[in-house]
Image (cartoon, rainbow, N blue to C red):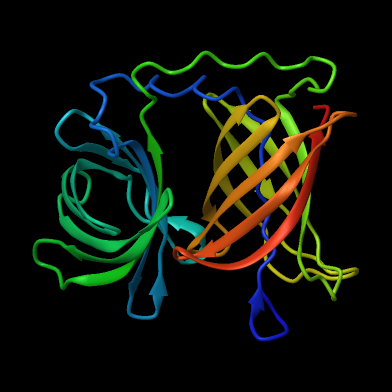
Length: 281
């Protein structure tokens, strides 16, 4: 993180070439939720126990009444896994922009948790308290990205002019920078297609000669309609609490470019530009 001019500017990689709008929606199976209820939620948690910090992420899938939740192993100091993950059930209660999740694990920690937060667009963030038998309660923060179910009768996709849309590769190289950029900050990384998303690794923020933040990784879900691209990012490692929304346009010469807004725990803190192109294996 680099601080300048009334605040901290964090430059973090994320963007994606992606499949056409609706191409991957609805492929998770099971009944579709009511309108306005996310079909899938990608959530990341950042517990803190004393001076020790942890992080991990999970996926919530709508099952018709609540969410089936699967969590990756909890990562502790030294980026070492401290458990084998967890499986459970999460119920969501929403009132306006306020949201509450109630979680009960059936496999793994066999504990429970209550999440409270605020929804901003298709993202949410807030605080969480975990409860484990025979252990003190502990608290942390969480961020999430909502992925909605497709419309019941979607319009057919518009034809894409082949002369203006480049081929989309399995690997994409992207570089981005903040606005303003008095210190010539820049961040570049590689996006690799994995099933219905891109796995992302990036170098961390550099100025002209030295690193400013440590490398990180994450995932990107994206939608494309005609030559317009929208991406939603969730970080897994790097700087906790970061999500981002990317908007761009596919142009000629196999490039994609646009603008990005970064969020820290659901609050927008910086904007920037990006440009990307396919990269050979």
